[in-house]
Image 1 (cartoon, rainbow, N blue to C red):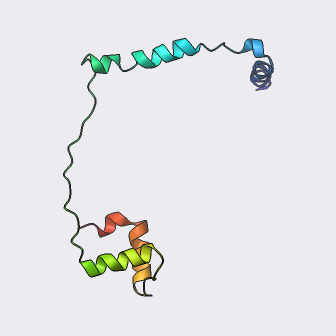
Image 2 (cartoon, one colour):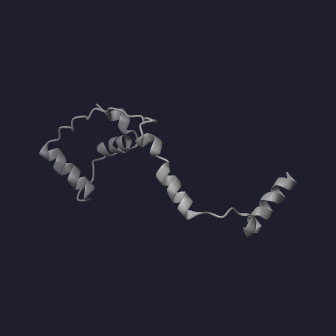
Image 3 (cartoon, helix red, strand yellow):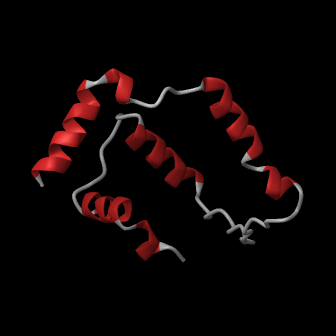
Length: 95
């Protein structure tokens, strides 16, 4: 344990022990990394999703939500805990 700690400490304190970085080689490595995907040798996973229809909201409900968001009014005492639960667990209330 002592030796590995001493070796790590000396590498940190001695700048000559660090490997010199080459920005150009790092950039070219970044350009070459996606090459197999471009050539079709490696396929990326893809998923199909279905868009859900937006919820039907009446004009009165929309105005109420806008007022809550802009601080002009607050939800009543019965609605506040429900809103908190929906914020924390939205997947439980999806239809």
